[in-house]
Length: 195
Image (tube, rainbow, N blue to C red):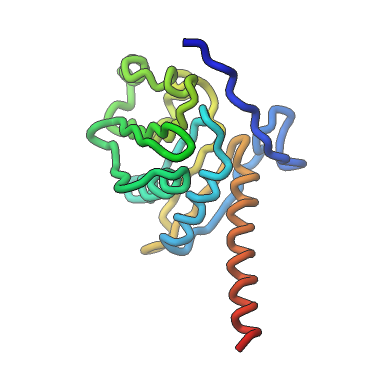
């Protein structure tokens, strides 16, 4: 099967990017609630193009799978989106194309490259699948090269998280996420003014 080259990012990253289009410093976001995390997931989904690789990192319980679920729903996946921790890979149909959600927690280490080759994730990415990988930092080459977006999550409270976004899509995701927040704030102001 011949594949067409993946589309180039359409982001205007301005001074926050180096010559390759990568964000030079992570863009931070504080997520005060699950709702904020869902909104970040929707912003990430809007920024993606077929063949993109997104890496999610953070401690156990930091919200990687919750954010992955929000991204999947933002791409148009219907129904339950469950963790692939024990199955390693879950393929989901979305309105924008195939989404391959991967959790590499159980296969990190020496056998990682062989297992990834067996799973065919690089080929799926080359064919245009969105590749969303938890615990994938050690596997970039086997996944087809650099990620368009890396999100490092950290626990900041019972429901609060911090998200550090880096990669070529980070600034546009942060801008989209901020735009959602600004629209919500303006809508709240209009409601208060009309009372």
